[in-house]
Amino acid sequence: MSITPMSAKQLAEKVITKENLFILDVRNTDSYVDWKVEGEKVQSINIPYFHLLDGVEAVLEQIPEGQPILVVCAKEGSSVMVAEMLAEEGREVFYLQGGMKAWSDNLRPVKIGDLNGNGELYQFVRLGKGCLSYMIVSHGEAVIIDATRMTDVYLEFARLKGAEIKHVLDTHLHADHISGGRKIAEAAGGVYWLPPKDAVDVPFEYEPLEDGKKITVGASVIEIQAIYSPGHTIGSTSFIVDHSYLLSGDILFVDSIGRPDLAGLAEDWVGDLRNTLYSRYKKLSKELVVLPAHFMVMEELNEDGSAARKLGELFKENHGLNIEDEKEFREKVTGNLPPQPNSYQEFREINLGILEKDEEEQREMEIGPNRCAIR
Image (cartoon, rainbow, N blue to C red; front, side, top):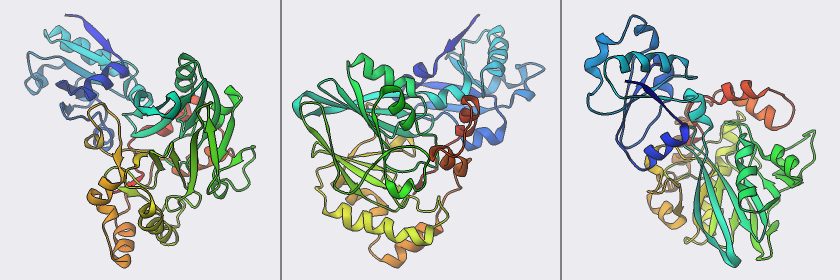
Protein backbone atom coordinates (compact mmCIF):
# COMPACT_ATOMS: atom_id res chain seq x y z
CA MET A 1 0.00 0.00 0.00
CA SER A 2 1.11 3.59 -0.62
CA ILE A 3 1.27 6.41 1.90
CA THR A 4 -0.72 9.64 1.64
CA PRO A 5 0.15 13.11 2.89
CA MET A 6 -2.29 14.88 5.21
CA SER A 7 -2.05 18.66 5.46
CA ALA A 8 -2.38 20.56 8.73
CA LYS A 9 -5.59 22.06 7.34
CA GLN A 10 -7.05 18.59 6.72
CA LEU A 11 -6.00 17.49 10.20
CA ALA A 12 -7.68 20.54 11.73
CA GLU A 13 -10.97 19.69 10.01
CA LYS A 14 -10.82 16.12 11.31
CA VAL A 15 -10.21 17.36 14.84
CA ILE A 16 -13.06 19.90 14.72
CA THR A 17 -15.56 17.53 13.09
CA LYS A 18 -14.61 14.88 15.68
CA GLU A 19 -13.59 12.24 13.22
CA ASN A 20 -11.95 9.18 14.75
CA LEU A 21 -8.21 9.52 14.34
CA PHE A 22 -5.31 7.38 15.52
CA ILE A 23 -1.91 9.07 15.63
CA LEU A 24 1.50 7.49 15.94
CA ASP A 25 3.78 10.27 17.16
CA VAL A 26 7.46 9.39 16.58
CA ARG A 27 9.04 12.43 18.26
CA ASN A 28 11.09 12.15 21.44
CA THR A 29 8.99 11.37 24.49
CA ASP A 30 9.63 14.69 26.24
CA SER A 31 8.38 16.60 23.17
CA TYR A 32 5.27 14.42 23.00
CA VAL A 33 4.48 14.81 26.71
CA ASP A 34 4.91 18.59 26.47
CA TRP A 35 2.76 19.11 23.36
CA LYS A 36 0.80 16.94 20.94
CA VAL A 37 -2.22 16.86 18.65
CA GLU A 38 -5.33 16.65 20.79
CA GLY A 39 -9.06 16.32 20.19
CA GLU A 40 -12.18 14.57 21.46
CA LYS A 41 -11.83 11.70 18.98
CA VAL A 42 -8.05 11.72 18.73
CA GLN A 43 -6.17 8.74 20.14
CA SER A 44 -2.39 8.82 20.06
CA ILE A 45 0.63 6.86 21.18
CA ASN A 46 4.26 7.85 21.28
CA ILE A 47 7.02 5.56 20.00
CA PRO A 48 10.20 7.55 19.33
CA TYR A 49 11.63 7.15 15.85
CA PHE A 50 14.90 5.64 17.06
CA HIS A 51 12.94 2.66 18.42
CA LEU A 52 11.65 1.97 14.91
CA LEU A 53 14.90 2.06 12.94
CA ASP A 54 14.97 -1.73 12.66
CA GLY A 55 11.31 -1.99 11.64
CA VAL A 56 7.77 -1.70 12.99
CA GLU A 57 6.97 -5.37 13.55
CA ALA A 58 7.38 -5.16 17.33
CA VAL A 59 4.86 -2.31 17.69
CA LEU A 60 2.15 -3.44 15.26
CA GLU A 61 0.03 -4.82 18.09
CA GLN A 62 -0.20 -1.32 19.58
CA ILE A 63 -1.58 0.09 16.35
CA PRO A 64 -5.25 -0.71 15.58
CA GLU A 65 -6.10 -2.54 12.39
CA GLY A 66 -8.88 -1.55 10.06
CA GLN A 67 -8.56 2.21 10.47
CA PRO A 68 -6.23 4.84 9.00
CA ILE A 69 -3.10 5.82 10.90
CA LEU A 70 -1.52 9.27 10.90
CA VAL A 71 2.21 9.32 11.59
CA VAL A 72 3.52 12.57 13.06
CA CYS A 73 7.03 13.90 13.68
CA ALA A 74 8.62 17.30 14.18
CA LYS A 75 9.28 18.28 10.56
CA GLU A 76 8.01 15.42 8.32
CA GLY A 77 11.00 13.29 7.31
CA SER A 78 10.88 10.69 10.08
CA SER A 79 7.12 10.26 9.74
CA VAL A 80 7.45 9.49 6.02
CA MET A 81 9.96 6.71 6.72
CA VAL A 82 7.82 5.15 9.47
CA ALA A 83 4.68 5.48 7.33
CA GLU A 84 6.37 3.62 4.51
CA MET A 85 7.27 0.76 6.86
CA LEU A 86 3.68 0.56 8.12
CA ALA A 87 2.35 0.58 4.56
CA GLU A 88 4.59 -2.38 3.76
CA GLU A 89 2.77 -4.20 6.59
CA GLY A 90 -0.53 -3.56 4.82
CA ARG A 91 -1.75 -0.64 6.91
CA GLU A 92 -3.55 2.44 5.54
CA VAL A 93 -1.17 5.23 6.47
CA PHE A 94 -0.99 9.02 6.28
CA TYR A 95 1.82 11.32 7.36
CA LEU A 96 1.49 14.93 8.52
CA GLN A 97 2.91 17.27 5.89
CA GLY A 98 5.42 19.62 7.48
CA GLY A 99 5.15 17.81 10.81
CA MET A 100 4.29 19.53 14.06
CA LYS A 101 5.81 22.75 12.76
CA ALA A 102 3.04 22.91 10.16
CA TRP A 103 0.46 22.03 12.83
CA SER A 104 1.71 24.92 14.96
CA ASP A 105 1.35 27.34 12.04
CA ASN A 106 -2.11 26.38 10.80
CA LEU A 107 -4.83 29.04 11.07
CA ARG A 108 -8.51 28.19 10.62
CA PRO A 109 -10.93 31.10 10.05
CA VAL A 110 -14.37 30.76 11.65
CA LYS A 111 -17.18 33.27 11.18
CA ILE A 112 -18.35 34.47 14.59
CA GLY A 113 -21.25 36.59 13.42
CA ASP A 114 -22.71 39.46 11.41
CA LEU A 115 -22.33 43.02 12.65
CA ASN A 116 -24.49 46.09 12.18
CA GLY A 117 -24.44 47.51 8.67
CA ASN A 118 -23.46 44.26 6.94
CA GLY A 119 -20.16 43.87 8.77
CA GLU A 120 -18.66 40.47 9.65
CA LEU A 121 -16.47 39.22 12.47
CA TYR A 122 -14.08 36.28 12.00
CA GLN A 123 -11.98 34.37 14.51
CA PHE A 124 -8.74 32.77 13.31
CA VAL A 125 -8.17 29.62 15.35
CA ARG A 126 -4.63 28.30 15.70
CA LEU A 127 -5.46 24.81 16.93
CA GLY A 128 -1.88 23.69 17.39
CA LYS A 129 -0.89 26.65 19.56
CA GLY A 130 -4.14 27.82 21.12
CA CYS A 131 -3.85 31.37 19.70
CA LEU A 132 -6.99 33.25 18.63
CA SER A 133 -6.96 36.32 16.41
CA TYR A 134 -9.67 38.35 14.73
CA MET A 135 -10.70 40.23 11.60
CA ILE A 136 -13.58 42.65 11.27
CA VAL A 137 -14.73 43.37 7.73
CA SER A 138 -17.14 46.14 6.77
CA HIS A 139 -17.79 48.01 3.52
CA GLY A 140 -14.40 47.24 2.01
CA GLU A 141 -12.39 47.92 5.16
CA ALA A 142 -10.80 45.51 7.63
CA VAL A 143 -9.36 45.60 11.13
CA ILE A 144 -7.15 42.81 12.49
CA ILE A 145 -6.66 42.11 16.19
CA ASP A 146 -3.91 40.01 17.83
CA ALA A 147 -2.49 38.69 14.56
CA THR A 148 0.04 35.86 14.60
CA ARG A 149 3.24 35.91 12.56
CA MET A 150 1.53 34.03 9.68
CA THR A 151 0.77 37.37 8.06
CA ASP A 152 0.02 36.04 4.56
CA VAL A 153 -3.10 34.28 5.86
CA TYR A 154 -4.67 37.57 6.97
CA LEU A 155 -3.58 39.48 3.88
CA GLU A 156 -5.04 36.82 1.59
CA PHE A 157 -8.28 36.57 3.56
CA ALA A 158 -8.76 40.33 3.40
CA ARG A 159 -8.09 40.22 -0.35
CA LEU A 160 -10.71 37.50 -0.83
CA LYS A 161 -13.17 39.64 1.12
CA GLY A 162 -12.37 42.66 -1.03
CA ALA A 163 -11.28 44.60 2.04
CA GLU A 164 -8.40 47.00 2.62
CA ILE A 165 -6.70 46.56 5.99
CA LYS A 166 -6.98 49.94 7.67
CA HIS A 167 -6.02 49.13 11.26
CA VAL A 168 -4.09 46.42 13.09
CA LEU A 169 -4.34 46.16 16.89
CA ASP A 170 -2.65 44.15 19.62
CA THR A 171 -4.46 43.85 22.94
CA HIS A 172 -1.11 43.70 24.74
CA LEU A 173 2.59 42.93 24.33
CA HIS A 174 2.53 39.19 23.61
CA ALA A 175 5.05 36.98 25.41
CA ASP A 176 4.08 33.51 24.17
CA HIS A 177 4.20 34.04 20.40
CA ILE A 178 5.35 36.52 17.77
CA SER A 179 2.87 39.18 16.75
CA GLY A 180 2.31 39.78 13.05
CA GLY A 181 0.55 43.07 13.72
CA ARG A 182 3.29 45.52 12.82
CA LYS A 183 4.30 43.54 9.72
CA ILE A 184 0.71 43.41 8.43
CA ALA A 185 0.24 47.13 9.01
CA GLU A 186 3.42 47.87 7.05
CA ALA A 187 2.43 45.55 4.19
CA ALA A 188 -1.11 46.90 3.94
CA GLY A 189 -0.37 50.54 4.65
CA GLY A 190 -2.59 50.42 7.73
CA VAL A 191 -2.19 51.90 11.20
CA TYR A 192 -0.64 49.79 13.97
CA TRP A 193 -2.10 50.26 17.45
CA LEU A 194 -0.52 49.15 20.73
CA PRO A 195 -1.17 49.92 24.43
CA PRO A 196 1.37 52.63 25.30
CA LYS A 197 2.20 51.18 28.73
CA ASP A 198 3.38 48.01 26.94
CA ALA A 199 5.34 49.94 24.34
CA VAL A 200 7.73 52.14 26.31
CA ASP A 201 10.73 53.20 24.18
CA VAL A 202 9.84 51.01 21.17
CA PRO A 203 11.83 51.97 18.05
CA PHE A 204 8.81 51.96 15.71
CA GLU A 205 5.81 54.23 15.22
CA TYR A 206 2.41 53.23 16.51
CA GLU A 207 -0.88 54.74 17.60
CA PRO A 208 -1.57 54.49 21.34
CA LEU A 209 -4.56 52.41 22.44
CA GLU A 210 -6.01 54.32 25.34
CA ASP A 211 -9.09 53.88 27.50
CA GLY A 212 -12.18 55.10 25.66
CA LYS A 213 -10.49 55.32 22.25
CA LYS A 214 -12.89 54.46 19.41
CA ILE A 215 -11.92 53.12 15.99
CA THR A 216 -14.50 52.84 13.20
CA VAL A 217 -14.57 50.22 10.44
CA GLY A 218 -16.27 50.91 7.13
CA ALA A 219 -19.32 53.00 6.37
CA SER A 220 -21.39 51.05 8.89
CA VAL A 221 -19.42 52.68 11.72
CA ILE A 222 -18.73 49.53 13.72
CA GLU A 223 -17.08 50.91 16.82
CA ILE A 224 -14.15 49.26 18.56
CA GLN A 225 -14.01 50.76 22.04
CA ALA A 226 -10.79 50.33 24.00
CA ILE A 227 -11.04 49.44 27.69
CA TYR A 228 -7.88 49.58 29.76
CA SER A 229 -7.73 46.21 31.53
CA PRO A 230 -4.32 45.54 33.11
CA GLY A 231 -3.33 42.35 34.88
CA HIS A 232 -1.75 40.12 32.27
CA THR A 233 0.49 43.01 31.25
CA ILE A 234 0.53 46.55 32.60
CA GLY A 235 -0.96 47.81 29.32
CA SER A 236 -3.50 45.08 28.55
CA THR A 237 -6.48 46.54 26.73
CA SER A 238 -9.82 44.91 25.93
CA PHE A 239 -12.12 45.91 23.09
CA ILE A 240 -15.88 46.11 22.82
CA VAL A 241 -16.96 45.61 19.20
CA ASP A 242 -20.37 46.67 17.91
CA HIS A 243 -21.76 46.74 21.48
CA SER A 244 -21.92 42.93 21.25
CA TYR A 245 -18.47 41.39 21.62
CA LEU A 246 -15.75 41.69 24.27
CA LEU A 247 -12.27 40.90 22.95
CA SER A 248 -10.56 40.12 26.23
CA GLY A 249 -7.00 39.51 25.08
CA ASP A 250 -5.17 37.37 27.64
CA ILE A 251 -7.10 38.65 30.64
CA LEU A 252 -10.07 36.28 30.52
CA PHE A 253 -10.46 32.92 28.77
CA VAL A 254 -13.36 30.50 28.50
CA ASP A 255 -12.28 28.31 31.42
CA SER A 256 -9.41 30.21 33.01
CA ILE A 257 -7.90 33.64 33.61
CA GLY A 258 -4.69 35.33 32.50
CA ARG A 259 -1.39 34.99 34.31
CA PRO A 260 0.20 38.17 35.74
CA ASP A 261 3.83 37.07 35.90
CA LEU A 262 5.39 37.22 32.44
CA ALA A 263 7.30 40.38 33.30
CA GLY A 264 8.33 38.92 36.67
CA LEU A 265 5.82 41.13 38.51
CA ALA A 266 3.18 38.65 39.65
CA GLU A 267 2.85 40.12 43.15
CA ASP A 268 2.48 43.62 41.70
CA TRP A 269 0.09 42.79 38.86
CA VAL A 270 -2.22 40.27 40.56
CA GLY A 271 -4.12 43.18 42.10
CA ASP A 272 -4.60 44.73 38.66
CA LEU A 273 -5.81 41.38 37.34
CA ARG A 274 -8.41 41.09 40.09
CA ASN A 275 -9.56 44.68 39.61
CA THR A 276 -10.05 44.14 35.89
CA LEU A 277 -11.96 40.88 36.32
CA TYR A 278 -13.97 41.69 39.44
CA SER A 279 -14.59 45.43 38.91
CA ARG A 280 -14.14 46.60 35.31
CA TYR A 281 -15.65 43.49 33.72
CA LYS A 282 -18.41 43.26 36.35
CA LYS A 283 -19.73 46.60 35.12
CA LEU A 284 -20.09 45.39 31.53
CA SER A 285 -23.19 43.86 29.97
CA LYS A 286 -23.44 40.15 30.74
CA GLU A 287 -24.76 39.70 27.18
CA LEU A 288 -21.38 40.56 25.67
CA VAL A 289 -19.80 37.57 23.91
CA VAL A 290 -16.27 37.08 25.22
CA LEU A 291 -13.69 36.42 22.50
CA PRO A 292 -10.28 35.70 24.10
CA ALA A 293 -6.81 35.73 22.54
CA HIS A 294 -6.17 32.09 23.52
CA PHE A 295 -7.84 28.85 24.44
CA MET A 296 -6.22 26.28 26.70
CA VAL A 297 -7.85 22.91 25.94
CA MET A 298 -10.01 21.57 23.11
CA GLU A 299 -13.03 21.33 25.43
CA GLU A 300 -13.24 25.12 25.41
CA LEU A 301 -14.11 25.15 21.70
CA ASN A 302 -17.67 25.18 20.37
CA GLU A 303 -19.01 22.74 17.78
CA ASP A 304 -17.81 24.97 14.92
CA GLY A 305 -14.31 25.17 16.40
CA SER A 306 -14.66 28.71 17.77
CA ALA A 307 -13.93 29.89 21.30
CA ALA A 308 -16.71 32.20 22.51
CA ARG A 309 -18.99 32.48 25.57
CA LYS A 310 -21.27 35.14 26.98
CA LEU A 311 -19.74 37.11 29.82
CA GLY A 312 -22.65 36.23 32.09
CA GLU A 313 -21.99 32.52 31.60
CA LEU A 314 -18.33 32.96 32.51
CA PHE A 315 -19.21 34.79 35.73
CA LYS A 316 -21.24 31.71 36.66
CA GLU A 317 -18.91 28.96 35.43
CA ASN A 318 -15.31 30.23 35.28
CA HIS A 319 -13.66 29.46 38.63
CA GLY A 320 -11.25 32.35 38.23
CA LEU A 321 -14.21 34.74 38.42
CA ASN A 322 -15.65 33.20 41.57
CA ILE A 323 -13.06 33.68 44.30
CA GLU A 324 -14.67 36.32 46.50
CA ASP A 325 -11.90 36.66 49.07
CA GLU A 326 -9.10 38.85 47.71
CA LYS A 327 -6.38 37.17 49.77
CA GLU A 328 -7.49 33.75 48.54
CA PHE A 329 -7.51 35.04 44.96
CA ARG A 330 -3.95 36.33 45.30
CA GLU A 331 -2.74 33.08 46.81
CA LYS A 332 -4.43 30.89 44.19
CA VAL A 333 -3.15 32.97 41.29
CA THR A 334 0.45 33.38 42.41
CA GLY A 335 0.60 29.84 43.81
CA ASN A 336 -0.61 28.10 40.65
CA LEU A 337 1.49 29.71 37.95
CA PRO A 338 2.26 27.28 35.11
CA PRO A 339 5.73 26.96 33.56
CA GLN A 340 6.87 30.02 31.64
CA PRO A 341 6.28 29.92 27.86
CA ASN A 342 9.28 28.81 25.85
CA SER A 343 11.52 31.79 24.97
CA TYR A 344 9.05 34.23 26.48
CA GLN A 345 11.64 36.96 27.05
CA GLU A 346 12.75 36.74 23.43
CA PHE A 347 9.13 36.94 22.29
CA ARG A 348 8.76 40.17 24.24
CA GLU A 349 11.91 41.61 22.71
CA ILE A 350 10.91 40.66 19.15
CA ASN A 351 7.47 42.18 19.64
CA LEU A 352 9.09 45.31 21.06
CA GLY A 353 11.21 45.57 17.91
CA ILE A 354 14.55 45.28 19.72
CA LEU A 355 15.43 41.73 18.62
CA GLU A 356 15.48 40.20 15.14
CA LYS A 357 15.09 36.51 14.27
CA ASP A 358 14.75 34.93 10.83
CA GLU A 359 11.61 33.03 9.87
CA GLU A 360 12.92 29.56 10.71
CA GLU A 361 14.21 30.73 14.10
CA GLN A 362 10.78 32.20 14.83
CA ARG A 363 9.07 28.91 13.95
CA GLU A 364 11.41 27.01 16.24
CA MET A 365 10.75 29.41 19.11
CA GLU A 366 7.00 28.95 18.86
CA ILE A 367 7.03 25.15 18.98
CA GLY A 368 5.21 24.03 22.11
CA PRO A 369 1.98 24.55 24.03
CA ASN A 370 0.16 27.71 25.05
CA ARG A 371 0.96 28.72 28.63
CA CYS A 372 -0.90 32.00 29.07
CA ALA A 373 -3.53 30.89 31.57
CA ILE A 374 -4.04 29.99 35.20
CA ARG A 375 -6.60 27.18 35.57
